[in-house]
Image 1 (cartoon, rainbow, N blue to C red):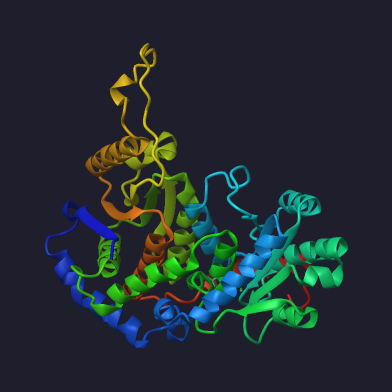
Image 2 (cartoon, rainbow, N blue to C red; image 1 turned 180 degrees about the vertical axis):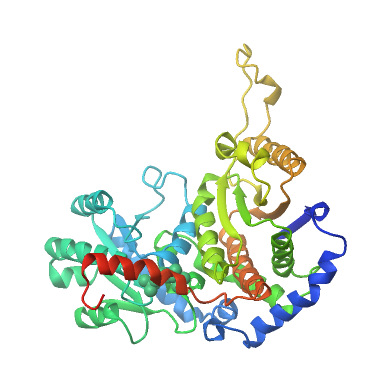
Length: 435
Ligand code: PA5
C-alpha cells in the first residue's frame, strides 16, 4: 500500500484526545459498512468489487476497446454525474495534457456529452462527428436521465445519417441497468452491444464497473492495473479500522472531527492541472453522499498554484470555516529542469538545475505553512506517482473513506434524494406529461 496520509497539521486545531474519542464511532461505522447493516446497504456492491472483478470482464472490455480504437478517431462518452465523472477523472489524470495534439498510437480523442444542456456545446460536438470517424458510449444507470437522453437522441440521429442504422449500431455502446429504463429498451431494440451496471452499485461508486472501465480502456489506459491498485486498497481498508493501519478510516475520522469544530468546507487541493476532474469526481462522491438532512461538509476544489492567484487570498484570510486536503504527487512522470541563462535578466538563476517538480513541491510546502498559520487545518494525502495502479488505490481509498465518513456523520451515504427536486421543477416548466 503506497498512499499515505499526514494529519500533523490538523492536530493543533482539535481538542486533545479527540482522535481517541471518535475512534469507537469510526470503528462502528467501519463495521456497519462491512457487515452491510446500515442505511443504503443495498448499494454496497462496490466494496468488494476490485477483488471480485472477473478477469473475463476485463478481457471483454479490452477487446471491445481495441475494436473501437481501430474504427474511431473520436469517442464520445454520454453521461452525467457518476456516469461520466470517474472515467473523465482517470483519463485526464493519466493521459497527456493535450490529447488532441499529442496522440499516442491510435488513441481516439475522448469527448464528453450529455453532462450539460448547452446548445452551443452540443452543436460543436455534432460538428466534430461530421468531420471525424467516431464511436459513442451512452451511459445511464436509470436509463431515463434527461441530459444524456437528449444528447443521445441528437448524436444517435447524427450517426445514423452518417453510417446508416446498421453501421451506427456497431459504433454505439449502451451501459445501463440490467432490466429497467428507456435506454435498456432502446439498446435491445437496436441491438447495441451493452454492459450492465450492477443493481447494487450506485452511480457515484460505479467507476470500477464498465461505466468507467470501457472509456478508460478506449483511452488506451491500463484497466487491469487500475483494478489491481483498488484491490490492494480494498485489502487494507477492509482489514482493520485501526487508524495506524487504515488511511481511509483516519481520513474519515479527521474530517468528521474538523466538522465538529465548525470547519464546514473542505477544499481539495491539487498541484497538477490534470487532476481537476479527479477533484470534480471527489466533489460528487462526498457532496452527494454526505450533504443531506441539513448536515455535511461542503466539498470544494482548487488547483494550485493557479488558484493561489484567485482563491489564495480567501483561504489565507477569509472566513475561518475551511480546511484543506492536499493531494500531493511525489514524482512526476517526465523530467523538466530549469535551464541556466548566462544573462539572468529574469533573475531566475537561483533555480537553475532544479526540476519543476521540486519548485512545485516547495510551493506546496510553503503554502501549507502559510495556510496553517492563517488558521486553515491541512490534511495531506500523498501518492508516489500518477499511474493506473496508484490511482486505483486512491479511488478506492476515497470511496471507502466516504462510506465510513457518511455513517459516522449519521446519514445514508448511498442515496441522493435531493437530486430529484430540480428535475421536478424543470419538467413542470418544460411541460413533461405528468408534471
Ligand atoms: O450518484 C448518482 O447516483 C448520480 O449522481 C447519478 O450518477 C447521476 O444522476 C446520473 O444518473 P444515471 O446514471 O441514472 O443517468
